Image 1 (cartoon, rainbow, N blue to C red):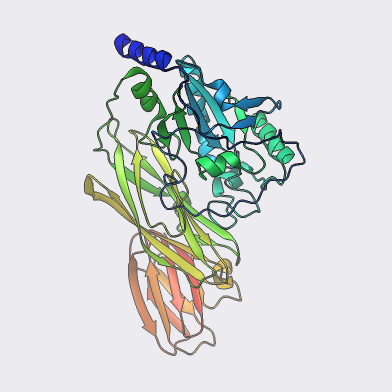
Image 2 (tube, rainbow, N blue to C red; image 1 turned 90 degrees about the vertical axis):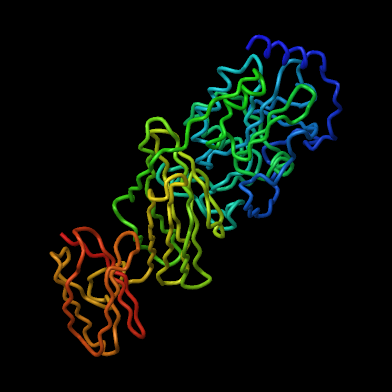
Length: 445
């Protein structure tokens, strides 16, 4: 270990600051609070944010950014022989960034002799009521809603600084913060990406790039040890086993047209030694019309057109999964997923998610519902009252995973009796006539 460390230091000291940086991308003059934040177009990315920005081996440009005390930071003046520089981008409304603050603090505390670490604060990833740069629609995200982190995109440089003050008052981030300029020069050159990272040597050469900073199974600690100390870590095996648990044992979300409906659950790696790799595939995506879209968030939020994702979970750890319906008209949509253990296909789950903005689904059994179903909860015997509806009606019953339990069609029947087969639990009754459709949740005791 000492020999490897010495070699790294000698190489850095001998090379010094001999590399000429690319021309500056930074600001010409120091920003003032009233400077407006420049418009930045929506960026829909399917590469996991790996395509934007320079790559390993590229030479850095020079730039000047400012901190919260209005002190200027010019990169060319801060290249120090024998030291690396780590830039990590982020924003307060990015839940992934907030979750990585302990990791960032760990890097600052344990690698400060070898690395100068900076957070570059940029455009908000999930503003509360403004269009998200990375989604193309308003997407505050369930984590922000539940934690009350609901802020609009700053309109000027002063508002961006004020939001950093709010973040600093609520989070224990010890890394120094550099503020991207009003026209988002850093984000434009090095992204756009919600939370990428670059490690640069003392010559201004990029030696590491994280498309998502420290996104498992990539570890910034392992990467730093490899670059700085020549240590190669021994990763865990991948023979773990996962379990899946729905949030509130529910896969149906109700709301009004225009709402974002959120469903989800938790993956748990039950192994104490090995990681588990889960291949996530959206096998169906039934949206009622073009006003509806849907998307998933795992450890990152993915675009509406992304149907596959591979998740790796450490031993004895959990990872939340969210599924969003971005609704428009009053209708019902659904999506189905397969979760499959890459190294043990028998360890798999099929999961359906349902979203509804229909009045009948919202009110379940009220007087305006298309169909009345009773009793609910039930021991198994159900009665359907269709009132004055005379056309044929199809009743399809599914379980929480979306599996069809039974399906029957009835002609010109106002009152129908049906026995719900299956064990105790929650089921969904999909009731469709020629002109009506309802989704009703039923509990079998």
